[in-house]
Length: 324
Image 1 (cartoon, one colour):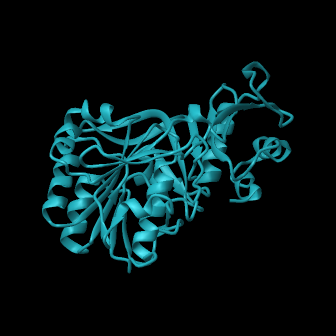
Image 2: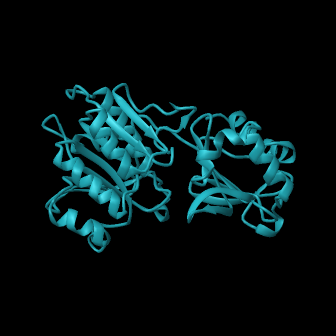
Image 3: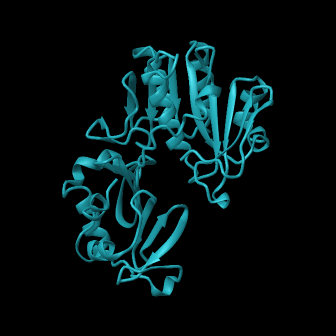
């Protein structure tokens, strides 16, 4: 991702401010806009406020404040002045733009028959920037692939710690093949357009040559759809946790398909205390658990430990080890 790619997403004054600011495109994670609130930039796991002169500061009272009109114009600019084309995505609270970047929105939810029909009077915008790190899964692949077989794998990670980036590269490598592993068909259910980052139906991120991707589809329904129609050898999903997800996982396992998944958490013990996951762990469903350490380590995407289904530690990282 280049600086200009980011800057041209914004109109008027915001574009001028970001042109002046000293920020690293490779480390940029989010830009947050809230009505009458400071302009916030997340970079390399840290939060910065941005002044009108483009200075990054830790003092909110010095920051440039976003006007209601800037929220409106920015959203129109991001949607290329055709927001009606993104109505279905906006119903879920986000839209995906060219480059695979995700724009989350918040405002007044419009309900119809107790279901969200859309979001109006938008007052908050969060642009999350997609970063591919090809090869970041290299250190974990010897544990995920065992005797030419893909292991059922669960990535456990606190928020903002690189779990989706790691999952994406695992998908790419399993799909393309790596070393002695010839590659196989992978089905991806990308409920929030974060794995493939589809724009107009085309993944903007490299998810491999043998990958079939369902975009903006609920995980539970998507897993079943892929099983019925695409005959995947592996199914990959991000952030499991609902009862419907667990039911679809069980169907996936019964079909003989391998599973790659992620979940929010910080330890094996925490997973054992989650009612929906506890049974899967007790029944040794997942053959590998990959733990990513938190932002407090100042290493986003750092692998902490890898365990097998019996709780044996296969890998424990040094403090300096990071993948993303």
